Image 1: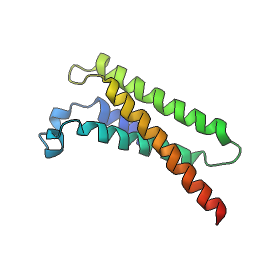
Image 2: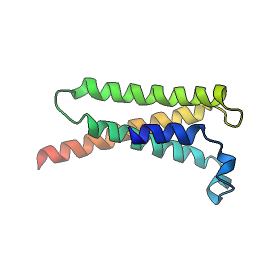
Image 3: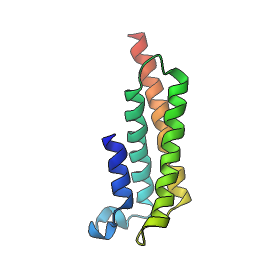
Length: 115
């Protein structure tokens, strides 16, 4: 839950308050931040539901929930703030992070089952 709340806070805060950082001068670096954030979000939820009773259905709920959450945050950026804007490429980066988390989680889960 903490990662979920932290993403909402960071996504809706005024980034000018953070100041000029070298990271923000690199073109499209925010897409890497989006991918990493949503990777962490999805992976943490996969770990939370890591139980055989959830199975594929649980993973699907996490995937769809995280992607929907990313879309919702982008809409809120456009509607609730005057200093942030929603971006389709951010939604794409978020979704790639979620799917990458699924891939890594499945690889780790399979390796742990073999041990």
